[in-house]
Length: 199
Image (cartoon, rainbow, N blue to C red):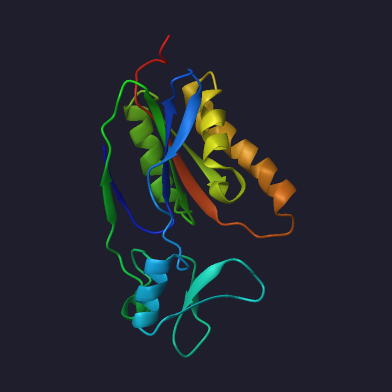
């Protein structure tokens, strides 16, 4: 499997461990502007990285002379106003050999609300006979750990309902942990690597 990652998207593998339990392996890096290498590049290009007073802990990229655009990632497609200030679109490319123990991959991207894109993804899922499951969700990675997400998907008996169940759990967690915060729409895909669960 080859993964090219840009932005704060994440891919997490659900794999069977030696004791038979399901384990989570994060396959990608969330490219946040406070990562040392990312921040160094942005600062070298005269961009700024800091948290806004309304969102402590959320590092954003700002133009040198004003509080804009406040991009919460260090790599992105688009966002041209900060391309000269260290935000790049070069992906990190990684490879992993799929084994019989590897069960599924969860992909999540923060901030995608394009209904056309979601309909295309849904159509592709139907073509793959429910081997993939797509669902809108709300910043799942902010409130659900990799391990929790993998366990939710693994414990869902009907694969076509896995993403929906994950979303429901994440929304409940969001309401419990982040009361009063606005959330962006996101998309998620659960890609199952085998036709049926191993027996």
